[in-house]
Length: 201
Image 1 (cartoon, rainbow, N blue to C red):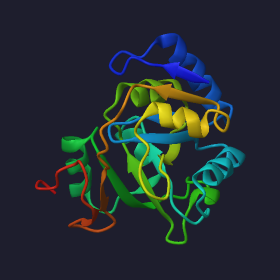
Image 2: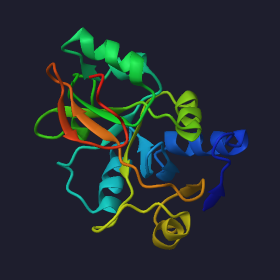
Image 3: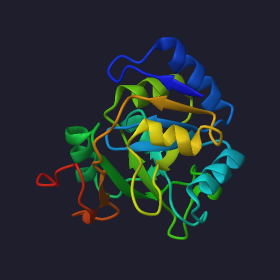
Image 4: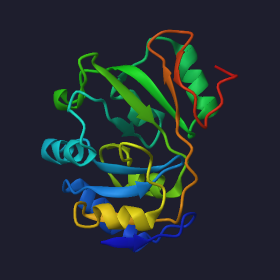
């Protein structure tokens, strides 16, 4: 099912319906501040296994947590240096994925061998509205083929309409990936330069 969503003022009725679906373990494709992403709830192992299958990647590949704020993120990470927290307060929400050591509260079925977790606090109304309605963080990963990220909702519908529980169409997104930083130590290590600037890290 395709939902046509206003990118800045997403319809409350649709957000309520999608949040209920996610809490039940359904999988949706939603827009973020970088690209479109598959998402589901952190607390449903079968849904996460299906997400891996949709992505056609092994379960050893890490997914990202989409948290609503610093307080929620702190439940799932081990923060080694308060300078990272200060940087987060100054720069998030925004187009960054921060790699932390995972706290014991992270479900084992979500962890890579390195026991890390990627945290995103996304600057997009759809993600923020869903996060406000959910008890647990979203978990997900960007939508892409072997060659490229899929940023056109028409292509998403053609490829995934029968495979996911819903697609939230906010129009074509200009492909800009998140900047990935490994923040397990200070100073952080740049893994991928993306949309987010890093001069202030």
